Image 1: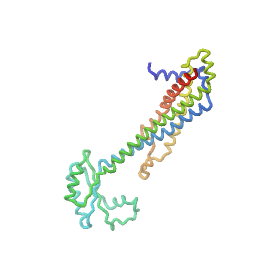
Image 2: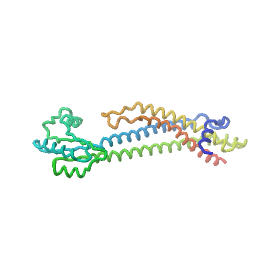
Image 3: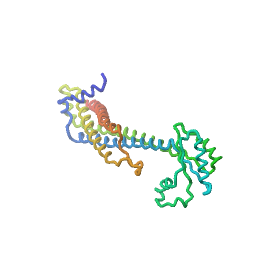
Image 4: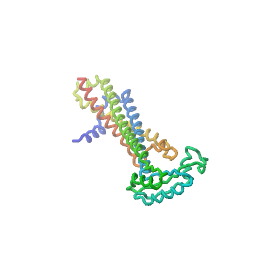
Length: 301
């Protein structure tokens, strides 16, 4: 027989007489419920940060993966000629889907966040930028650079790899950090519940001794503690998840102006993931309490 049906039966049915062994309130009850709720609340934010980091990295990576920028620096009299030569070269380059020179207004918009809206672009020696859109297969960047050196000496190609790779690495490490945080939260929850169960068992040592005298088995006594502490952990985790999701809803939605500081919540089907936290907390509490009960009862012999 598998463990899951047995666990569900113990959890749902219970035993009124056995449940009386466990104090229904007090320090251990409060500690277990609070710990499960606090850990579930923190797990919500660790999960939200991990998912948001993945979305942000994917969006930035997609934007940079199939686009490049060509920067042309040339004397004023040669700028138009070199720009036209670069556009002709790009049109004949395999893997280049389209290429266009940015207008003065578009380049001004790119510089506006740093220099303000009144920057006199026409009076400054600003390089001409050409936006390149690649096909799915992409182009040979090394070969294109060689052709540009020969035909457009003032051109510098930026294929965005130096921007994309650090973003992908940082996103991967942040996702790993989120996973490690969730595992540490689960371990902390198990530790606190184990300590609470040990305290409850020690406080009821005399009651346990009486139960043994009248013929109660240790498995019968342990079952009462396991069920009660599992219920407490489930209740606390459910409260923590509700509070955490409410807090996530209060975070600002994704906005271009806010960058990565916005859009840290859940999206689409990811809203269902927090629903897994209370059952996982219950599983952690079940095994932690069962281990603590068996060990403590054996020490009370």
